[in-house]
Image (cartoon, rainbow, N blue to C red; front, side, top):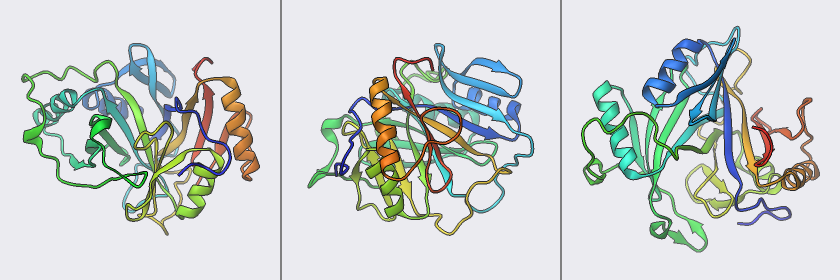
Length: 287
């Protein structure tokens, strides 16, 4: 489903993600030792992690923030790290088993995904896509499911193949708990300009640019829960990276026309009805 007015360019992608955490050292251990990122830069209470100098994830230790303890919060459902191949996913499975780290798993037809929890109770997905030619499309909708992962069908890799997140790893998508799907569609579809590509999955919408299975997932599985607050470990903001400055201007104008004003002193930041902040950035600007 194309948005009614402005439509994001096909090259739009997820950029950096910043999380508020309760203990920076503990979170650094998880995202480096378990997820396999490296520290690119660190200053005071903020650490920037990524690969080969490119920042993917920012961790900020915020005074007063506590780990999520029981119950869900509207806001971040999970941050999803996209591996470049199914071989890399197979190596990551070996790594988790060797480290005795608990995880869940789901086969979504277009991807195979593993699910973990960070030290603050924030969910993390690590996944690999199947080739686009194999995705199931019915009447323009990309079909999604949650089936069991057939681990024996993952490519065989040598023991010890995982040496950290490989080159080409990105943040492929983000998934949010929201209070209402129609209201979410007004912000992310009619305002921001994402296509809705999956709409029949129970309680969820999946939205993307360029025909991807989703850059943003939206679900009401925690509807009625409180919104993530100042005392909660939570998502602070995420970046949507667009090809150029004109694209940033047009996306911002579309959100404004839909009734969502830019917030704060940083140009190009907008907040959805559940406090989720998206920051629009041009690919050719300083990250």
